[in-house]
Length: 149
Image (cartoon, rainbow, N blue to C red; front, side):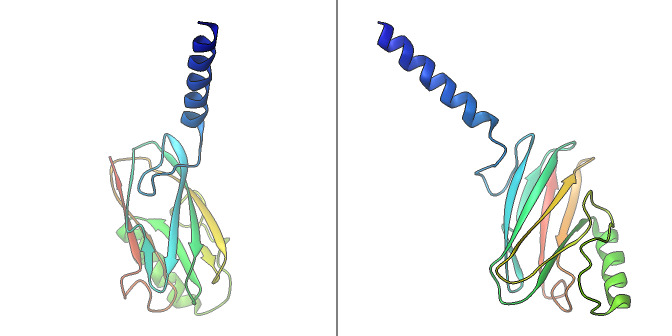
C-alpha cells in the first residue's frame, strides 16, 4: 500500500513539473508565458501560423536553418509596412537588432546557423505578423501569422 502511495505521489510530482515547464513542446502555441521555436529557411518561417492568447507574453526562438541572413519583426500590417519603409531607407547598414518598433524586443537579425530571440506581449485579440524584411524576403512571402484570441 505504501508503495502505491509513493508511486501516485511520484506521478503527481512529475505532472506538476511538466506543467510548469516554460519551453512549450507544441510549436504552434505557447502556454501562459512560454517559448515558441520558429525555424527560418530561405524564405519561409515554420510554423507559418501560431496561436496566442490576449495578454500572453511569448518568447520566440528563431533558428536560421537557411543559407541567407533573415530577420524577425513582430507587428500588425501597418507596423510591418512602416518597418519595411525604414529598412529600405536604411539600406544595408548592418545589424539593426537594437531597433525597437512595435514589439517588446525590436527586430532581430539572425545569421545562417545562428539563433535569435524576441519576446512579445500580445495585448489584444486579432492578427499579428512576423516578417522578414531582408531585401525581397517579405515580398516573396516570408511571414508568419499569429492569431491572438
